[in-house]
Amino acid sequence: TGTRDELENEHGMAHLLEHLFFKGTKKRSQYQVMNCLETVGGELNAYTTKEETVVYSIVLKRDFSRAVDLIMDVIFNSTINEEELLKEKEVVKDEIDSYLDAPAESIVDDLEDVLFSGFSLGRNILGTKESLDLITSKRLIDFYHRCYTTDELVFFSMGNFSQTYVEKLVNKYLKDIPSSTRNFIREIPTIYEPKKVEFLRNTTQAHCVIGGRAPSISEKEKYAFFLLNNILGGPNMTSKLNMSLREKNALVYQVDSQYQTYSDTGLWYVYLGTDHEDLPKSKRLVYREIDKLSQNKISDTLLNRSKRQIIGQVILGLENRENTILSSVKQYITFSQVSDINETKEKYMAVYNEAKTTTDK
Image (tube, rainbow, N blue to C red; front, side):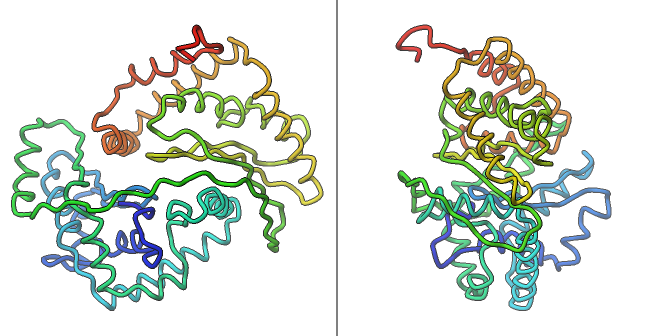
């Protein structure tokens, strides 16, 4: 469940509910929830995206059963106390203010609101101060029962223990949980009309995003798109945008391009921050680099270098076990399987400059 599952009058509920998971259960107080894993050096955390809510822990092997017990408790037995609800609303409002103080981040939300206008996918994750004020404990509980159904739940673990042990432990908690089924399907965003939108804010720099719709996580074109994005403005000092706007012209401190995939659509954008008087020239240079990529064939040398860069980034990312398990869960939710690194490498290596046959293209 993510924020795109919220109805219009439920804006901000998924994220707020994630906060309340930690505020006490039927058998644990808020302090006991927070203290359960900290006392053994472990961690309990959670986050909400537009398509999923994730509660996870990192613990020593010996404390695995303790972590399972706690996670099951906060997901299935959390209590929504009115006093805590009011406090968390204020916390999220502060989070909203903090986010608005970071125009480089909030401007991306503004872009998504344009790209997916009229659809829940376009609304920001935090909600608004006005929408938060309308949330009651009863409406929050109704939202939980409507969206957090057992057929949409995935339990995922990684560690040095057998699958049999994990299944036995998890089933100990799940056997008494009644099954439930989601009775709605997500609305797929339709075609949008390109727009130019400007906001006047009292900021030192001008912040700009240029973007559009892109392939979803399920489309095979995503691998080619990831490579293109890496060449244009990926996290490399030698990206086209960084070389043009920063290294050659000294117009920006930061410029990059991002590709975000969702289950049924995606978005791509270029972000830059520059002095107000340098914005027109900066935009011209961005469009020039985009035009070059779209009109000219990429050399085999550059394409192969981009492949090595991305594959290297993926492999190095596996060194972070937390990132590994969270990305694995996302894969399983989407595809009901987890790809290993060799499969991922093959997908990228299979991208080529020109179609070998009309059918391949």
